[in-house]
Length: 330
Image (cartoon, rainbow, N blue to C red; front, side, top):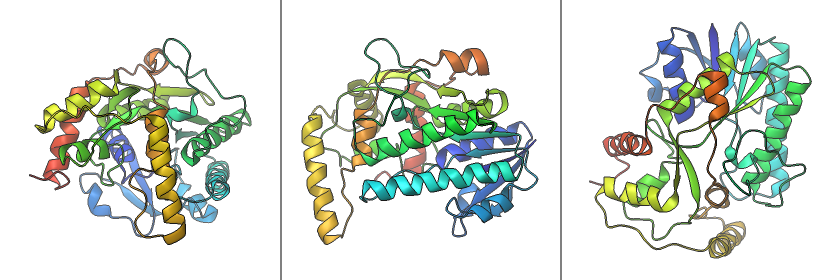
């Protein structure tokens, strides 16, 4: 099978490509013109240039592929009006769908976010829960992820062979930005002064990449699959990172309302004067505030996916990688 991976230079795409390579699939990395391919020197792959904002480039990049995984779905990074964020997300998804149809792709995967699932009132959240309308939370990250999830499920109902894979909070190697690994880096460098309480599910990037490949291989079109690891709370997660980093335990927490207030002040300052983007982004707040414990039963039963690494394993592997690449001060 010849698999195209959009976002293969990112953490999730890279780990998915590693798993595909183990299975001796042909790998095509689909990336922007200015992508740093030195990040993927450990892979054997064909390189194709495309942009999710350019329908024609996607159609060309998908030619001759059996399957495509979109591991680079849009999410807000700097403060912009919600209408602009939604327009960008909608446009990119429609171009992705059009290219899948035009290239007659047999299997496709959209990598979504758990924030697209409403919070469960009791027990563990699973794939069946859906918002009946746009979420009340107006944070751009929440709205964008809900929109793209809704669009993906609708496209599958209309006949696209599209599966939705949703990894939980992921830690691991190749997190160059860093993304979720920012929590580890900031704690290790003692730059984080307080954290938001809440529940999380933590999965290693290695397990997440394998689970996403299983979803592409075995998943049913239109279905969501939660790719999970270990259910924990933020107190335990933060304490474990502090222990691994050998720094004093971080015990100070910040109320959600206070975090939102500080974010609003920083976003207003950025809108008026630009300069440095807010340190406390609305995206980070939305991710942390929207956390909940997840049920991975569906992926276990239908995909034969079971995580092999623990939360501590995921933190340890990520920490070693960040330290090696200079993100963590010695």
